[in-house]
Image (cartoon, rainbow, N blue to C red; front, side, top):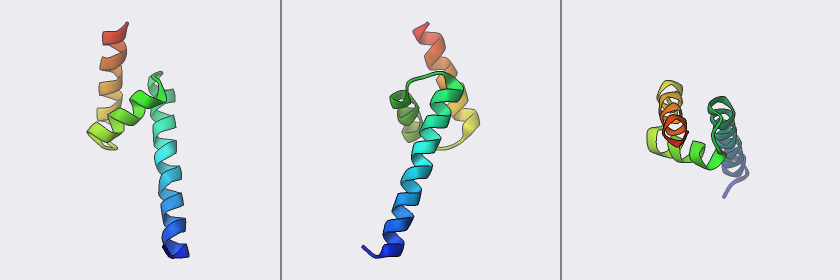
Amino acid sequence: MTLDGEASRDHNERENAERVRNLAERAGIPSGLALALILKYGNDPDVLDREAAKLKRDAG
């Protein structure tokens, strides 16, 4: 892999980790669930927040 490709991959991994962390904090759910929601529904914050709220409501 080239240095540019490696730097790009590292940048993408950091962005993905931040998305997971932000959703987990915003929704008050574990990061594993946040990751699963992102993988299933993509990066639309409205959809992610709605689905996270459903999970919290069903768990509580």
